[in-house]
Image (cartoon, rainbow, N blue to C red):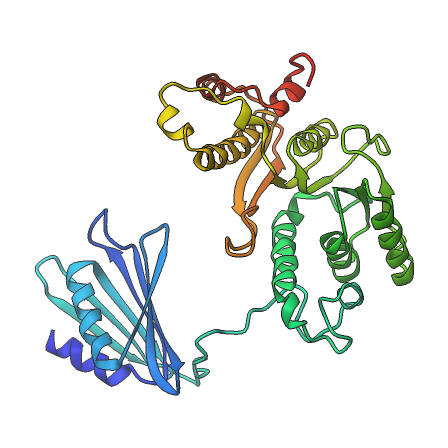
Length: 383
């Protein structure tokens, strides 16, 4: 162990690229540990990220503290250590009996020095410093491309949404003109962002229709689209439930459609055989008034708790019903909790495998609820 300690002391410095501990010793223990150098308040520190498979925890150490912690972790939690700096690669294997085998190898050629910034610059799909016309007009950017400080959360939200779009882009058929419907588009930050990213940056043949009930909003967005020459970006006044303006839709986006309006949008998406569904629900009141369960009454008697359980149950049941309708569904975090409590995004990608889920039915019966989406998709009376 003294030999390993000497090697670590020699190799852990400002030229360190990474340290990785792997080969978990315990089923309930950490699964991976990574270390990188950072500058904190002008001093060189080493940031350790420890993952348990679900969450990642971060710690900052000085050099001597780090060496002691790495050795402890190798003895208790991991079997293998890998270290790399600009000059050497080091591998250390520890046997069950505590014997350490160390291999140190000189790196051929030059290695780029590590980035020491504590907060590395995030690379956004809409890059900072590059002016985007609609972001300037909507007050998110200045004309020279700088993000307005008070609108930085909006800039980050837009880019996060585009990351969701990029993830599902391979599921879309790019051999023909695609149609995207955005229900409840509002001021259309994200509608313009979709168009700019898919049509202008990626060169896709695509038509996007933004739909909203507010005439002044539609007029303003239409004027902006004409100003930019976005011929395939159309804004219409209309209701989610009654919209019949298209026969085929490839992607349906519904952001913050209130209460059961989300269900009507999801039903429309399924009826159109949309390849992709992106939905951020809002104001899930319906189940709050329906839920009845003697077993869960100790939870339901607290109004705030009941409201939150109802909201989460609503979106979980929506996801399950979409899976029954032939979609692979994920429930993802859209933006951080500190910015808005409406932070769940339901993402569905069509797989065509329709299959009833008896457990889902049993869950609804247990809660005593009949969600609107269930009625719409399964034609259960008046929805």
